[in-house]
Amino acid sequence: MTQGAATPLPPPKERRRLRESRSLTQAQVAAKVGVTRETVRSWESGRTTPRGRKREAYARLLTELAAPQAARTARRASAPDPEPELVGAATAAAPARRSPSPARPARRRTPPPGDTPVERPGTPTEAFDALYAHCAPYLVRQTYLLTGRRTLARESVERAFQLAWQRWPEVAVDPDPAGWVRAAAYEYAMSPWHRLRRGHRTPEAPPADPEARRLLDALLSLPPAYRRTLLLYDGVGLNLPETAAETEASTPAAANRVLHAREAVAEQLPDLGVPDQLQRRLSELAGSEKLDPPRPGPVRSGGEKRTRFWTRAAIAVTVLIVGATALTVRVAPTKYEPVPAPGAPISGVPPLTGPQRLTDKDRKLQERLRAETSGGPQRLAPAAE
Image 1 (cartoon, one colour):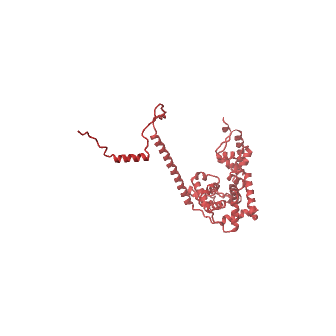
Image 2 (cartoon, one colour; image 1 turned 60 degrees about the vertical axis):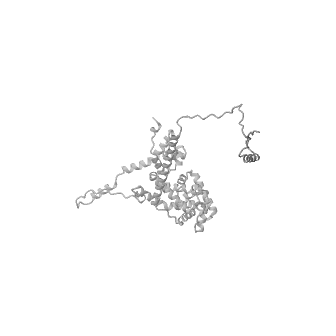
Image 3 (cartoon, helix red, strand yellow; image 1 turned 90 degrees about the vertical axis):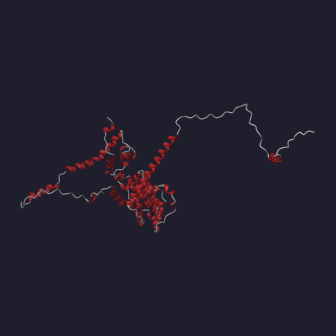
């Protein structure tokens, strides 16, 4: 029997859900099992599967994480419903003044405000439009703080949502679709290839407020990794493990980036040395810019057009390669034709001889002789004496 059959594991999505239910990071789970954080991420994404002792330790940890939830579910299932007891006691204490009424249906329990279920849209288009309406206005302002360019911010958000619509089956089941789109927008906005574009060479108009202008200059002076980490932690409001996961860094590295970024901003703007003041100013700077993203309909249609274009381009390139291959097979020789051997010098043969080239003097003499003796010399005939 194999080790995998002896220690079954839940699906990858269930592994991640169990870890998040106990507010554990991937680094903490990795420390408990004795592996790296990248290994835990691969286990939760399904790219790899644990084996041997690591699998047994990981299975025990997941069982411990699932035990409290199973206990709560069992207690809820075994707990008696207090409503029938109250109804029975009230019926027994009340006088029999009227005939018993028919059994009423079970009362629907109203969930608390924090557990109110969100009504999910019925179609993928409605779900995408709901995600776009919720995230796009804030995301375009965040991307502006990341790049300092309004046009690039709108383009980054539009491209991110086009990619999300192209991979919607993957994004729809993601635990954090807003984070998925945000990561895609940030990656596109911070691409170094934008420096080669002609429009990127011309600076855009800075904010009208001098304080906002100085804060934006301080942000843009930070390295891209520090700027993104500071924006996620102090601007968006993610916690440190989430910030580290989105920036693909370790938690200590993300913490150091936040601290160094705050120090760099405080050197240029001393009044923002307090984190609360920096967070407030970042929110004010993002809200002061009127950056309205395009409507979701054109974004979806643009993404579909882009997908059709690249699909047709790929088909055209494939047809071109197939045609070139077929032409090569058609005109290629079907048998081997040996290459003629190179010539070898032959000894004993005198070199070619012939009249030499005439000089200018010889050419003039030749022409004069031809002109004078055009009729030829007179023939002498014998005469009788």
